[in-house]
Image 1 (tube, rainbow, N blue to C red):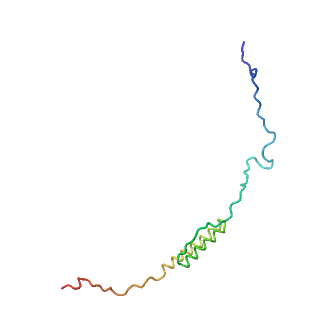
Image 2: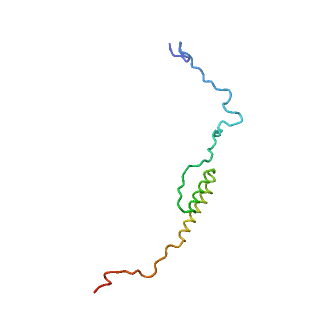
Image 3: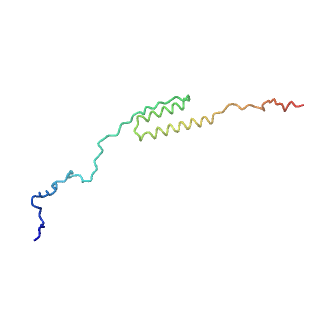
Length: 119
């Protein structure tokens, strides 16, 4: 005689079957893989608070002050400001190269050397 049998042992509780929900957990109009929209709004443009020290050159200072315009724009508007400032600063540097320098002394400098006074 065999003591083995297919059912649960006497005194042991039968394991409950897992419950399967009758309805899907998603809305019927949406597929179950639909991604949810982010629940946040991007931050509004805000000034960085970077102080600009005057350079002493009015043209350069005006261009650097123009950078402040980007503080109130969305990031896609920054490129226009940056390109404008970059072009202006490049023009200011070019103007420095075109400006005449100090006059060059004419003639040869007078030198007094011990070689000139040989005996």
